Image (spheres, rainbow, N blue to C red):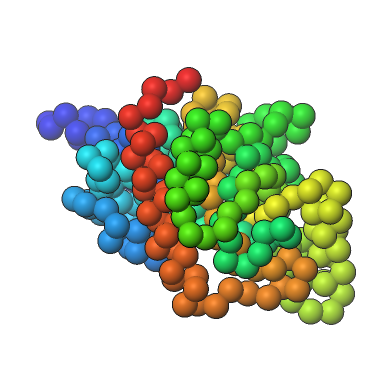
Length: 256
Ligand SMILES: O=P(O)(O)O[C@H]1O[C@H](CO)[C@@H](O)[C@H]1O
Ligand SMILES: O=c1cc[nH]c(=O)[nH]1
């Protein structure tokens, strides 16, 4: 039997150890995997299960895996945990976040840490444990962001489970619940909100690997105004370039 067939495939993402790279970029939307692939070389599509699309390709000679988790902290940490078990030690989530002033629509927001308002990180460590991004990875990201024409902000994210109950009011009395999010933003000085970051940062610290989040601010937390599609497409391409540059640098770093 070939060596590869003797090593188990990861339960949900279905990949073998030798099919993944030295660093991983985690995205929500599977369509984003196809789009980032255009910025990489030698791209190999891995088996797709439950919509968890994964590719491995190269960038500046380093092998990088990109995995889509869909939405929400429980599945995002499953994907991180499986890629960790396959040997990856550097993780960056890229995607979208709700913007909070001074960040404005179309800016990049980088998570230095995150408020743990979701329920998944608690299964890794008690709430007193901080959800903190990796300092080396964020230094590399800051250096790369300095070269970007787009404004960017670094600070503390808030991560929530309830999209229509905690983050984005559709109508009627549900809108009142969003007041709690605005209170958190003001009280704790949050710069952006999403549904995965605090769980990923906590899991990564417990698993002793590096992780961070870089997002485009796509929704205004105050007005709920959304970014235009054309601008998002441009910013997404820039985010791919920043993420791939940073992760190809990190792939050569020793872990802690
Ligand atoms: O970063 P992306 O994949 O766009 O995900 C963000 O959008 C989804 C909800 O709008 C959540 O998963 C949130 O974190
Ligand atoms: O409103 C938003 C936009 C992006 N991501 C979120 O989690 N919420």
